[in-house]
Image (cartoon, rainbow, N blue to C red; front, side, top):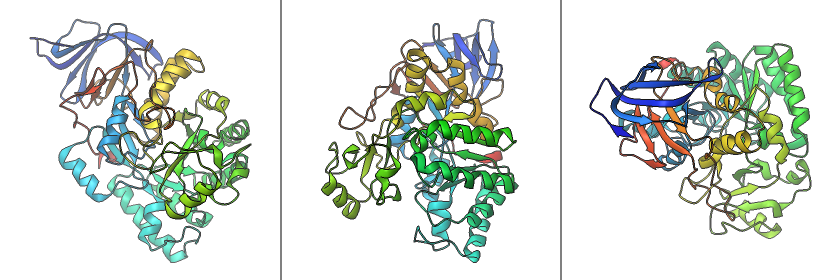
Length: 460
């Protein structure tokens, strides 16, 4: 990185292999950035106040993590931006009005948007504390009215954690789906069950789409049905629905395990039956005083009863299911990152490693998908899905959210507690630019690391 005397651009990126995700190819171009916008894409020689020579590297749109739990937390955002994430959508649990005001006033490390949670916001707001209780007609109307206010405020969708709130009725989903449809926003839905048991609950999602016309994003396909050999059947169900014109897409993680709080409904009695050849001994404790240990029956019972917020990692997923999902053009990639505590050394590797693992392992090493297809899954496809009109591609006057990486070196170094550090920084990401400011330089955060903004749908 050089500081030049020609100051036509604030940042100039020269000699890079630019990912043109609109046309689906790579082009050798120079990029000029002025303030927070891309203002030049050219073969002409350019210089800027700061000039980055990207020879031998890929210049990509910033990666969009549309389902995570960063939710305004600076530590989690630091992990995300170091792996190339420039925009995150969250709000399922922890993004409150105080955090939103702070981001508006102070900026943030990445761009932060939010979806509204049916499970943890809307139901709580109307006084439903019992996850097993269906909402009354009056409560459903109140939730729909509140959801409408959030849509007006700029929420990107409505999120349902049906496995965690089993009392949610079809009537409740349909009512909120009508709200989302009226604003052209998607529903983001976790299935009611995991593994092969979860396959029968696709019918509910399909029915909602058929009756309302709402778009649906099925969340974390790998961690829901990449278990017990269920992935092929799940993909077949989605494809049959899509063949009838239903707007259903999905996203997947790239690890063969998932993390959740041990006290949630995921681990209710009989949970092992949803997964093939699974027991409590497959649960690695990822937070608290027993961190790094595997569960046994007694410890599992103790933690569920007395420490339900303890994060555990379940090693129950089918490795081959990752590639199956990634090959589908309707399956994008998100991190689901930072579920549980936001502290150094705690949690799961998704928050630091998802995108480098996608590009390093599944593109370069295993050749499951092409580099362009992988980049599109984390840039233009989610940008289009969620109405991020100024993001997701390298075009004139788009936001200058950019990632510069070495495809020959990029890889994740994060791992699950007990096997490594979940927040270990990746290799191969040279620069990350958020709204025209260099936030990551050679894997280190810079002083200009609060150029991220609070973002809302339709810019409201």
